[in-house]
Length: 235
Image 1: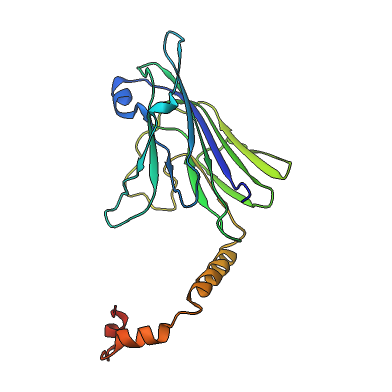
Image 2: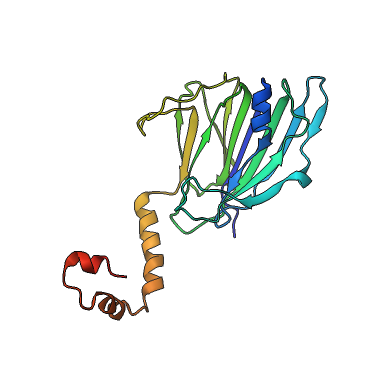
């Protein structure tokens, strides 16, 4: 299987308060096994005395991720790793690499990467690496000075979004309209069009049900039911 899109965000920031260290001294990348390979995480903590403390991969754990809604079930997982020797005033560098496998012809993905955070961010770098045949569409919000750099070689295209210092961001106003950007971000997607994705998915569904005896199944479910709403609620 050809290698699909690769997402490599890098950020560096300084922990500035003890409460932030206590609550956020860990790295938490999420991933979906059905379409993504297990992410790799690299991190380094540079303490106030200039000593370097790299993240020990052996401390990384992999567990099911808790969904935000109780009625939602998925195989989404999360990697957890404690940041070593974290303390107020430490410089933190994190890099997470995620590879996405191709799904089917015409299919794509939509992702959003946020710049900034609850602490001042010194440097952020988002790298998108994909086959040249994969179209990459993107939208930049609340980052007027961000200028992506695009290069192409050896059959692959690379797009780099790089940002410098960003002050700590306050909590967004609640109940904002969905079309109003709350935080600086880059939203990107692949795939040619929704129509092509829908057509390819429909073909997959049609192949699955081609030999299914749906008429007899439907007849059995609606047997004895006369009202339309009763038929709809059958099964």
